[in-house]
Length: 119
Image 1 (spheres, rainbow, N blue to C red):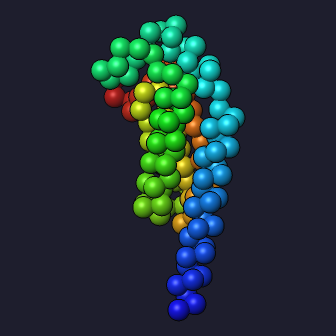
Image 2 (image 1 turned 135 degrees about the vertical axis):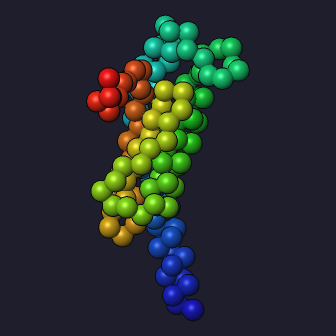
């Protein structure tokens, strides 16, 4: 019986910590810069005909962050960064050796390029 309560309390503390990480990012990330760049480039999402608002960017960022966190917790590989990206926003998450989220990061990716050496 006590095991259940311990797990319940610990689960709530872990969720609370994850929410704090997301809140910190949303409060400090410069969504205004993203909006300016997207307006300048006339960057729209999907079938939407207008540039996303700051509120839309924030909502999408939370979705990306939660998705990356869930993937990291599912895979359970410490020292591995997992990501979720869409519409220019890229969230990264990684876990510690106990399987708890150790950190998260949010990026706005304007452009990137990879090469595997096959030219």
